Image 1 (cartoon, rainbow, N blue to C red):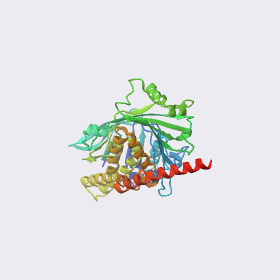
Image 2: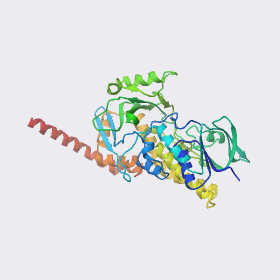
Image 3: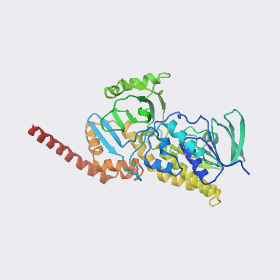
Length: 430
């Protein structure tokens, strides 16, 4: 008899939603998180879309709690010299909006949702010390509780939901698969209050690309704050040791459009970030263990899909674990079911993200290329498809298919001509 059916190491979105799903199925779960909850993670300035919220509905998470005080984002804007293109976020099951969530609020709400279930023992300020093993099979964990006591507990399955730098994966020396580091990026961000609006269109996520090699993201977030993030090539976005705050501010000041927005605003958080962001999968599991969320699969945040991937892979792993614990699948078969389903959903977006990093941050754009980019990004049909892609309603390859691109490039010059004639007609009337 084990102490628990499943022990989950890591209480952020992947771990908490996995615990909630297993708890709803009646399994005995220990969920541990080393940080106090609620609290900010080490680095994240995320956006979530309706498909993520639909997954959270399934575990009973309260949107009014995890998105409290957070404006609904209705559009995604690409802006730079000579370009302003907006994508309206499409409807998905009654939600046509996104949130640039406050991770402290969000993570705390999900942790509480899991912990409220009678078969889930949710403990914050509880750290993994080691895994317990028996002939190569993971049998449990040794932990340090919030009161400083050490405890060894057993489980039928131990899950690492402990992020990019997963301790569980490191202790088991888990193999990396499909890793890509050809185009390394780094990101730094802070939250601000009192930032002027970029335009008059209301709450938005605005990508501002003033320079080759890096760009800015501005999103309306909780409690009248905005997050301003800088992402770019790791060799370019490389603050000197101990000078992250000064470096971050100097990059903003370098661009008058941005500095005008923030010069009278208050920076309300320190600058956080990640260097040389990883892009990889890991083996999904082994004898007595599995990985989920960023511990299993991670990619560049440029397309804002990380939280969806975390809670979606948690759903798939919960289904696989339940099938195994019911005796319907061997553990090997359950892991294969989980990995196959997770890759079917995440791998096309993974490839698309890698391509976007290369094209957006590592490929200089000639003047004729900027014209083509404008024709594509301002094309209504392309905008519609991109909105469906970011809300996971179509696959990434449906946005980059040749007929769509050719059609947009044919419509672009006609749109330019029509706008030119309208301006001439307006001028003649004046």
